[in-house]
Amino acid sequence: MIDLKYSLVIEATEDPTFFTFYSPDLEGFTGVGNSVEDCLYKAKWGIEEHVALLKEHKLPIPKTNSNPTITIKNAKKLAVVS
Image 1 (cartoon, rainbow, N blue to C red):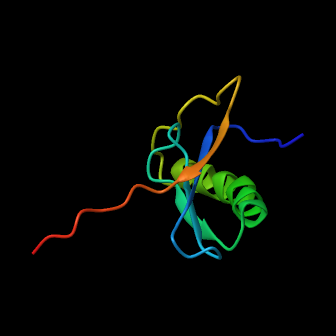
Image 2: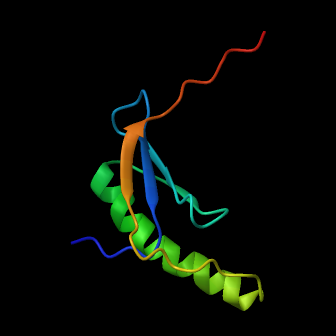
Image 3: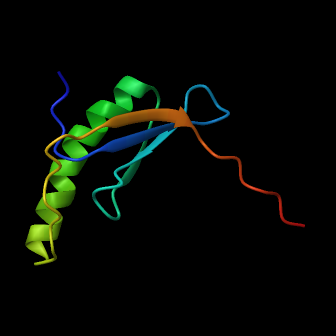
């Protein structure tokens, strides 16, 4: 079982060794990893660090998600602007 306090979205990129992740429950929390497993590991510890920083700066901390989800999907392609 993966013990996360907030939901997590992991996005695959065109590079098979590069993934991004963020939490829709925790504003400003993002990261990158080299695999899905790497993202899960980094997110678990990164969320704790992010919440600690919010506390340190006396910023509001969102309530933990009682049923957090992990979503793995392809990243949206950005439109080319000319």
